[in-house]
Length: 457
Image (tube, rainbow, N blue to C red; front, side, top):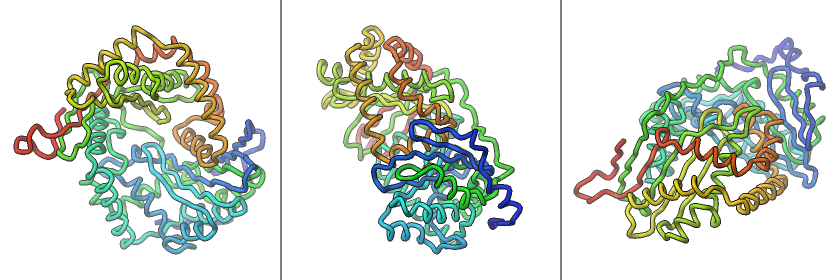
């Protein structure tokens, strides 16, 4: 591993902030950029003496080299090992000793590390987090231990869960060429061979300030965060060879796909369908906003259209839902789930789902229901301001996929401006069977006629 070069010339280059004229201060949010390319977002809320300190890297499982699935999550684990200045586990132990909590998580598009502590401990957090940005020193023994840990994590969360295995197959069928079709935790046959070179390769490519976003929320002042960020992160040189973020493109989907996953451990059979759908794009979030509201109108709760039809009127389902998560770098999915009542076959459940979707396109959106949903979204957005963690995650996740602070702050207003016509147009666009995958999670026909796990496509 290359050690951090703290030469005076590099320090002088990176220690200066971008001119203040490029900073943005709006709604209690200040953003600026260090001259080494690291973006910084400060969300001030002085009501409680608590701060959340987060570093987001624009590198997730979809950025992994082919054949090394799971390395982004593997590296996340290894980043809690020793550095030049800290022993194994010292960072988390120090956070706990100061009454805080810390953790990390990996997604398709980013990896994030956070500490939530008393506000007067912010400098300590920056000192430790900046240290492991370039100075991690894991060993072969660390690698072997953590590889066993992530393998066991996959065993517990995925291999022992038919629903998780089913979802993996659904994603793999939806994305034939894009890395969103590979599980974040990795495929087991590739995880078992991950080594120190794989982890260091990912670390030495992406873990640099010009590929990172620092988000600090809570009882802080922007000027003080600037000063500390300059000291601890500004001294770290950028990676001049940071690769452009180019993903393998998905070919046009021209035929609907089907997955049948059979597992004797299945307790509740259900039908799932995913449609390819656009994500939130910088400067153009209107389609994503309409899809967000479509998910709420169609299957977002006890008063949603699918619930009213399938669960109450027709009594053909014990649960139904629609889901959309637009905060991604590339095309995402719009998902529907129907759990048929006992005695109703999965085919009958799927037929009932299709009939309700077709009827929805005829009936349209109930104006009163839409107003209730918008009111709930307004209330949720206000309540979120009380949670330093939620606020920090909202900015970090969105900026990690290319959205700007202006995009993030405009999002609530864009949601409120969505009309019933916008929602119906989104529904007609997204409900394209040729760009869908329909799956059944079910049990074997008979224990002596089918293997424990069977996938057909």
